[in-house]
Amino acid sequence: MEDMSKVYIKDLNRDRKYFKAQLINRTNNKKHICETLRLVCDELWGKPGMETAIELLVDAMIMAKKMQNRLYYYQKTYHDDTGNKFKDYDGMIGVRARAKMRRERVW
Image 1 (cartoon, rainbow, N blue to C red):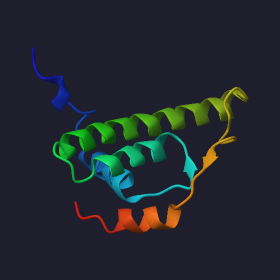
Image 2 (spheres, helix red, strand yellow):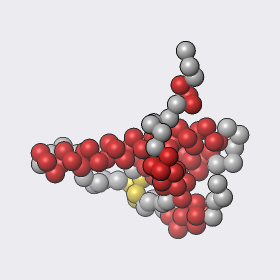
Image 3 (cartoon, rainbow, N blue to C red):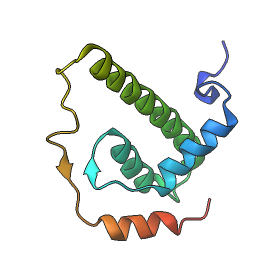
Image 4 (cartoon, rainbow, N blue to C red):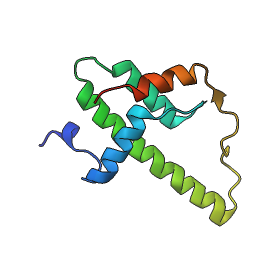
């Protein structure tokens, strides 16, 4: 049986590169799934084994974006009001400092 920890979502090089940049460099002022993944990335940055963990976080980021797109589609197509529509998210503090730190990362 092959080691599945090294198998990532499709081999979409352009998409993986884009989402990796989103994970490592972007910042949001609301704490939702993508920003939480970025916070995990912040905690792992510079630690041993970081590269493998970052690749798995990129997979999670891609999945989160696909899920967000699908939920948006359901909302628009079926007038689905069951989601929270970006309401009740926790606001974050220290956004500017975190954004500066993430932009200055070398990867």
